[in-house]
Length: 162
Image 1 (cartoon, rainbow, N blue to C red):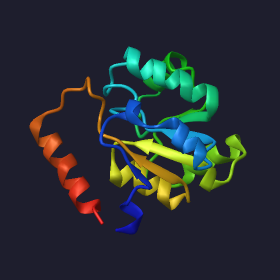
Image 2: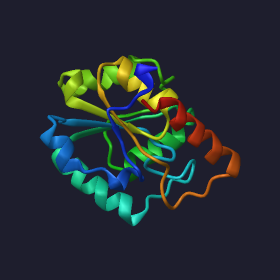
Image 3: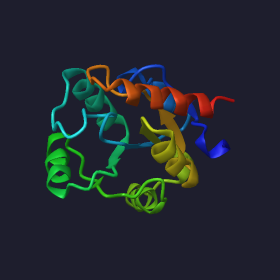
């Protein structure tokens, strides 16, 4: 269960993360989940809020996307849309391989990188297994999810509580 406990739990979406605090904690690189974290699933649309927040993140951190999304054309479109040179799809999270591949490109140590995502069983577990800091966020505020998905998210968060 320890591997499911994120380093940081944000009671909001990705735009509620205090990037200056991450910098103060020694973080130099950010690995993002894609669907529900930066974009509504399969939408290819970036909100103004997330776009502004990402602009600041790109200026102060090395950034990458690691996603389990298998649609390679979609991943290529996202790479351009988000201006993310390192974009890995079909990552098979929580496996460590994609996280370790990004780490080599970043030329950083695992403790200098934070994985940001909305799922404990993929994003948090994968990041923790790679020795990285992890940030658990709620899905985007603009995203509408079915009630059963909301219930599953609450259950996941209940399981990871200390």
